[in-house]
Amino acid sequence: MTEQLRNVIVIGSGPAGYTAALYAARADLEPLVLKGLEAGGQLMLTTEVENYPGFADGIMGPELMDQMEKQAQRFGAEVLAVHVTEIDLSSRPFLVKAGDQAWRARTVIVATGATARWLDVPGEERLRGRGVSACATCDGFFFRDRELVVVGGGDTAMEEASFLTKFASKVTIVHRRDEFRASKVMQDRVFAHPKIEVVWDSVVDEIVGDQAVTGVVVRNVKTGETSALPTDGVFMAIGHDPTTSLFGDQLETDTDGYLVVREPSTETNVHGVFAAGDVTDHTYRQAVTAAGQGCKAAIDAERLLSEELHAR
Image 1 (cartoon, one colour):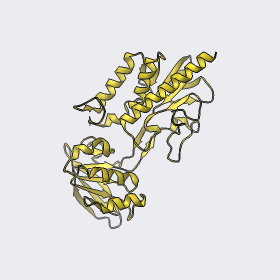
Image 2: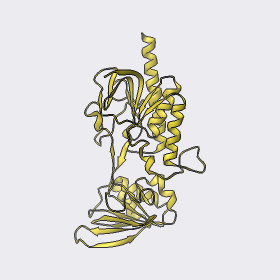
Image 3: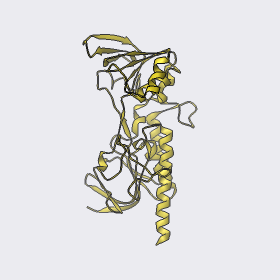
Image 4: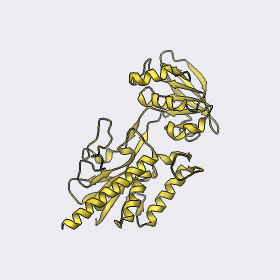
């Protein structure tokens, strides 16, 4: 198996991966992007994106990712639709494998992202992007003067519900227990808000709608009784899972499994390995912040390679 040597290998796509590839390509580093088989990140599940700078009339999520990929390729990035199956970060140049293909990398930029947790109930996948969302700051604007449901009971659910009150006429939080696990200050904010109601001890069993969400079926976990709750949108706030299983214990993670970077840089605990985007971020999770971090990662990689070149 021949192992071609590359200056930069970007693992993953989405705003972080493609921006890293763009900056690395413009620095003449000829990056290789191993974008995965389900490329483009969470924006591929989003319909219209209205909060990404530069698109006054908005842009479809998949189209934005396609444009980012083409822009990186224009400057010389090589993009392969392969899934990385193995990586060895024990020594440089690092070994990266995708099935029967293998490369060596002087630097690696990890942009594998994170995935929202979903309920896996009937109607959810079919109506994703048509009333089912996992990002209030991305999609809340589309639900002005509508009634909405938020599923969850942690700080994220409280934040999502509070944010959605800026647009919605009413927000109902559906929580499977009889108390929230969120911090007290966040709970107090929710309980005090006139637009927010809570349905306790309950789970969503089904999301209803033809072309768009029209309601949910809610089941009380103590009594087993089900009821219909009309709504125009359902926002999942039950957490995200960073995509880090590929790295095993080679890269340092925090208690939630997100990669730890040496801020203000994007370098991980392994010299020469950088990380960007949602795989490092459980606070903002926005396309624009991921893109910004992808830019930083490429600049960090370029500076390291330049310093090593001049030190020879």
